[in-house]
Length: 235
Image 1 (cartoon, one colour):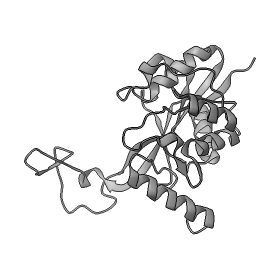
Image 2 (spheres, rainbow, N blue to C red):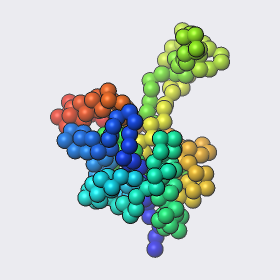
Image 3 (cartoon, one colour):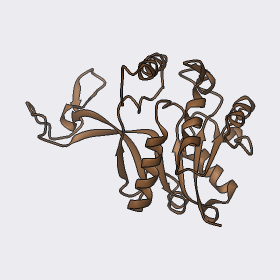
Image 4 (tube, rainbow, N blue to C red):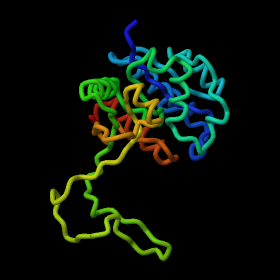
């Protein structure tokens, strides 16, 4: 049997900042729905799984067409558990590299990502023989970034701060967004993370990459989705 591409959507029941986030209605449907649908529409993904500790989410995901063969152990759904852990657990339970060649992480908190982006990330990972991480352009250089110390004073992120720089003087900074990560299953299980080595970047449109982590994010993303549906916004 040829090895297949698996997509795993981590969707636990508890959410600290936005209660019940994964099942909260987003433009009329639970937030989780949108990631499942786009994963199922992908031409590169063979199997779509949801990792959850919630019986409610399990039932809903199965109704949408995703596979949920078991509930995630409670200790893997705690707040401190990194998002890659339940994906590794799912892979190992399903047969790992003996069954799959590549694995996708698809976060349900980015509901505006498309099957086109999912396909592009998988294709890039296979063609470059590398892990691929989706990123969001910030439009800024590293010199624009500061931390705030205990006294409330700004401190440059880089030790050698420069001032009055023009756009193009240094490369643009991109931030990891977690929306669509892909890696070979062999390497993923070996390194225990998608963020190993020198990954290839997949820049996403900032609208498509919107990540819901707060109540404000939820409102903004919902309004953007409505504008996309009307054709007012385009990614």
